[in-house]
Each structure stands twice: as C-alpha cells, then as structure tokens.
Length: 576
Image (cartoon, rainbow, N blue to C red; front, side, top):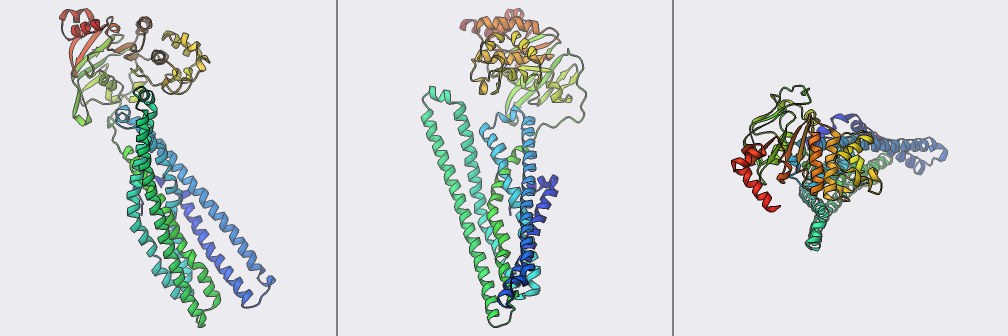
C-alpha cells in the first residue's frame, strides 16, 4: 500500500469530507446488497412462484428507489472526494510556494526552474487521484466486502468461506506488482522532470542557441529525453495492464468457483434458489472494491512518487528564526555595520567572505568595488537576508540584523539588481511592483527620475504596454531604467544599486548618477560596481578581494595609496 504518512497527515484538515466520501461509498455498497436481495426476490417470485406484475410491483418500486438513492450516494461521494483533493492541493501548493519564497534565491539558484515548476504544477496535480480515488478506495475495499460477508455468512456459510479465502489473493498480487510499478513510476517522474527542465532552458536560451547554431542539436537532445519519457511511460502502462489482467483473472476465477459450488448444491436441492441467486449476484460485486483498488493503485503510486519530490523541497531546512525578535527600527536614517562577517557556500566548502568589516553611515553613499568573485554580490545577499552570516554579525544602529523580521527589514530596502527581472505585464504594473496600488502620477514621477518616461511614452500603449517575459520587448538599458524606477517609487531609506548603470550609454549614465545624488539625501546608498566611473563621488569606497576588505577610503585617498584600488582604476582607464 502507498499510504505515505506525510500525505495522510495532509488530510487532517479535510477529515469531514474524506469521512463523508467513505461513508457514502459504504452506503452505496450496503444499498447494492439490498438491491441484489430485491432483484433475487423478484426473479424467484416471478419465474418460480408464477406471480404477476402487480404482485411484485412493490419490490420493483423499491428496487427503483434504491437504485436512485445509490446513484445519489455515489455522486455525493465523488463530490466530497473532489472537494477533499482540491482543498489539499490548494493548501499544499500554497505551502510549497511559501517555502520556496522563504528559502529564497540562495536555494532556487541551485535548482532547475523547469523542474521546480513541474513539481509545483504537475506534481501536485498527480495527488488529485491519490486523495479523491485511491485513499477512499483503500477504506472501501475493506469495509464493503466485510459488510457483504456479514450478510452472506448467515445465509450460505460455504460461499462465505470461499469468498473469504479468495479475497486476499487480489491485494497479494497487487503488492507483488506494486514494487515494480513504484520503481517505474519513479523513473517516469524523473524523466518528466528532466524533460520539463531542459525544455524551459532551451526556450529561455533560444537566442543564444540560434546565435551559436546549436538549436538543432538541442532539438535532438529534447527528442532523446522525450523518447526516454515515452519508454518509461509505456513501461508503466504495461505494468498497469498486467496488473489489471491479473486482478480481473483472479476475480473471474474466484467468482466462477462460487458459481460452481452454488450450482452444484442448487442442482442437488441443498440450497434455496432465492438465496443462491442472491449470493451469486453479490459474488462479482464482492471482488469489485479490491479490483477498483488495484486499478487505482497506480494513481497511488504516481501520487506517492510525486509527493517524494514535493516533500523533499518542503523539508529543506530554512535558517532558524531568532528566539527573540525586536520591533523594526523606527528612524528612517540608520547605520549598517558589518563586523567580521564570514560566509561560505555549499555548506561551508566554498568561502565567499572572510572577516569583512565596514560601516555604512546614515545618508552616506558607499561603493563596493573589486574583481569578479570578490564577494560583492554576497554582501548584497546578506543585507537582503537571502542568506545569513556563518560568522560575525551585521548590525543596524547597534541592533543585530537577525533580530529584525526579514519582511519588515526588506520593506526599508530598495534594490536594483544587475539583471532585473521584468514580468510579462504592463510597464506601469512592473514599476508598481515596488509599491502596489501606487497612483499613476507616482509611477510617472518615478519613471521620470529614472529617465525612463520618454521611451515609455513612445511605446504603443505607453504605460499600459505589455513588455514581454523578462522584458523581452525592451533593450537592456530600458529594462535597467524600469528597475531603477521601481527603486524611486519604493522610496526606501536604504538603496542598493547592484551594477545599476551597467547597461546604459554614457549620457544616460551621467543623468542617472545625477539623479542618484538627489536620491541619496536622507537615505543610505550602497553601490556595487565594476564600472569605476560610477563610484568616484562616493563618500566611502570599500575594496574587496578574495572575500576580504583590502582597502577602504575615498577615491582620492585610495588612489594616493597606489594599492588594489589604484590597480583597478588603472586597468579600467586602460580599457576605456
């Protein structure tokens, strides 16, 4: 049986509809027994006792009424089962999304987007049949045959014994085949996840593949993965058909045994026809619930296989919250201090920062510079609480940053990343991401400050123009200015500009630098830059190299030292 304890735990909030599903199914089974009794009595009285239509009219009316009530019970059971599955899927999808958000970019960067999307969408949908069909059928396959045996044993002990002895053969063979089905289902799910992930990668990188002439090769790879998925799917279907054949054969043989022993006793006058016909009608129905369980067993296998990956994500540990949280700092101006901060990726195997210390004073413009891999982006991720320090601490006005709720802290930060993500919606909605519900006048003002208003108004529908996934309809510089407009609209005390001018032409870059000087009033600004021309006017420049702070000071001071910063500036000017 594929009764995953974690999936059973999901039913704790929907026990009423789940119990209702089982009860209605059991009611339908009991009504089937009564229906069989009425039918056996009608046949016996008409063909053996010679009674007419009027004599059996009450039985026929009762038979029709029972059939209608049974149909209603089956319909109600389906409704309750679908409600149960729908509630669990909705809650599980919400939990999965919330957990991914809590894990943050530090986790998702190490996963394939297509595979995660497949888990969140297809994987959770695989649980529908598990909760709406398989789980209720597990209970019904035991309850309904027991109810039938309770009726059959007093009437015909021999038939009851035959049914009792042959019934366990069905779950026995189901378990035998189940091990093979589980292994194939895991292979099928792995192949589907690989196909989804690779297909999304190819779509997102189609421009690059076309540029290098590798699109046909990727098409062949997708074809190979598709063939593998098809083969595993066919293997699963073969097992399903084998299982169905075995279960049908067992139930047919078992029913035939009951029919033969009843027929022989009926022939020698040792059994009443009404009783014999009643038991004979019930015999195939007795095996129907276990057969249905065998049919839905594969839904259980698929659900349990998908659940393994879902719970792998859900059980990924998140940084432990602090034992005591303080209220978020009240002032709009505050100092941020790094005190011997260390951080390492891959569980400590790949150090990124080593004993980093520097201070960002209120209203100060601080620039982080250094070669690629120096640790600049890690500093930003630590400030944004995407990751937590493995050593040292970060304080805000003397308060440890880890004692401040992450959501409250992030509301005080406006971040413009090096590669901003733009959604497939209008320009205005993309800018409003910083402050949902902001009036259009505020959106336009933010765009003007980011020098984006002119090109936005030139778009076909202005601020209502959809800009495509990842801003596909915009240039790199235009996308960067939309991201800057978000930062202006948010109007947060701490502004982080991560390579904010990397995709801009020199004229626009000069305009934005001027706008940033205006924006930094009453705010704290942290600039991450490779293009050193954007940091010459910073109040403090912190030079990182190999995860350590090697120099700190103003542009003039650092040039005079003729150290690491001087080498960076010299290299930058030689490339300009």
